[in-house]
Image 1 (cartoon, rainbow, N blue to C red):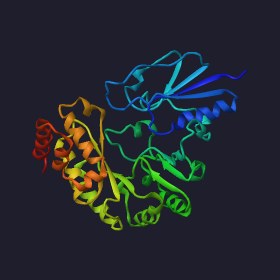
Image 2: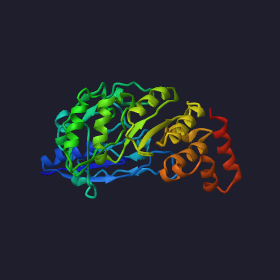
Image 3: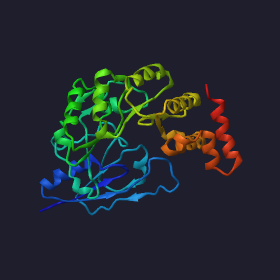
Length: 325
């Protein structure tokens, strides 16, 4: 007799690979599979509500990506997984190796997958080394691609010893558009992979790197010079921020990118919403994460356009100028 299986996508921003593989597994057992999406936001939000999961299913799986969101899910006999739950719960190998069931997300037209897992770095704010260990290849691109658009979820693709060979294979797939969704490590750029990235850029539209700390400035500047084929505003950099960082660390990275005609994407640790500078972080994110405004306006001009209250404008302007070096 077919069992009733419920898959709960708590907060994924993209189709959830783990749940899609669980769907494939249970459909192979001729079970009936249903997906529900809770769309719990990442950031603290007074509109977050408790989600009660029905108990009329034989098995319930719930994937939680962001920390603390598990507190907004109530139910019995739920099997939880995901980075927001813990770093040790993983799919059994026989399920991990299955193809994802994209029919769960009927409006999706993009393939998702990992060529590699793990990372060579050990950044203090990142859970990847604890969750996935050192860099290793786990899949081939031909096993991932199901659509004409692909997003690779690798955390440090350029750290793979054979990444240049894989890039050449991607370049040969002329009808495929792809993106390295988690960004690339600019510290690993050399002359050879720079040329390969240039050859592939028509298939990507651009690349995202990371500028995690002001102390990396000299190295990032040197590596950026190897990407001398880039056009203005074609490259984007993740700018990580948390309340432990000096504001000057954050502001100087953003301004350096603007001076070098690169786009920032401001990524806040969830604790930024608890900080005394919460509103300043919100203003910075609103400026950085709207490319058309960031390219055309200074932070001052943006604040004048964004706010009508003088005290709000002065708060952000004063912090900004006090922390520029």
